[in-house]
Image 1: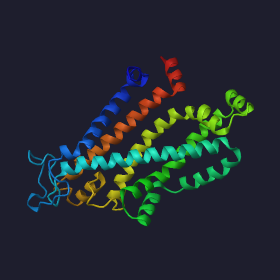
Image 2: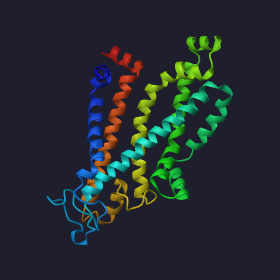
Image 3: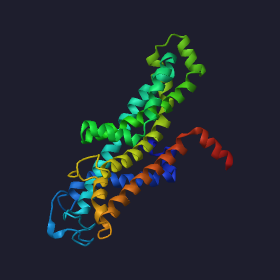
Image 4: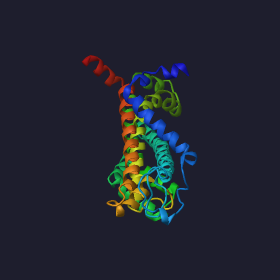
Length: 282
């Protein structure tokens, strides 16, 4: 464990700042049932549109629901969706990229399919998939995940194409090493660093896309507290109650910013070529 924390990444300010903010948000999401001051779905018309106060830390919405409770529960949905989208997209994209990059005859077929998916705007594809399947956490995850797979596949393929020509891979092929073993022991380790960085950007994109879907009414049901739903419900009364949009919007921006900062820090730490260039400049 001590050796793990001595990794150069933990000396990078971007990793520490981005990771620290995300850790706080994760703790808030996990502790939402304990932190929430009220039931996020409880309607109390007599408390509608109350400004932030000691009783209501972030005010209330048009139905008298506590914004603070809805925001902390919304963090659980946003982080769950982003983590699942990143994990599944990386796994599927990794498999497709490995096979397309290593098997020459499969490359053209797979990459043209990926190009076709990338030609469709991601948000439109997500809206179409949710509209066809119905709104649920599972369908939202799938709808956001599908447009991310081609990007991961192309990234992995580019790495595999360069690694495939290395002498140690050619030597393994010459010795008759089975393809799965070559991919697992010689090719896969070289894709880990770029995949970790790509995963952070997928998380940020997934959080934004989920919020956009909810804001447009194509995401999860309004009964489910998500940052996008809260912002959507507050746009009609923004002039009277700006806090309804301000607090979830601020947390949304802070989360995406933290993930991007973390991704930049990991890229700087894990990319040896960038490290050499920075060392030369210094």
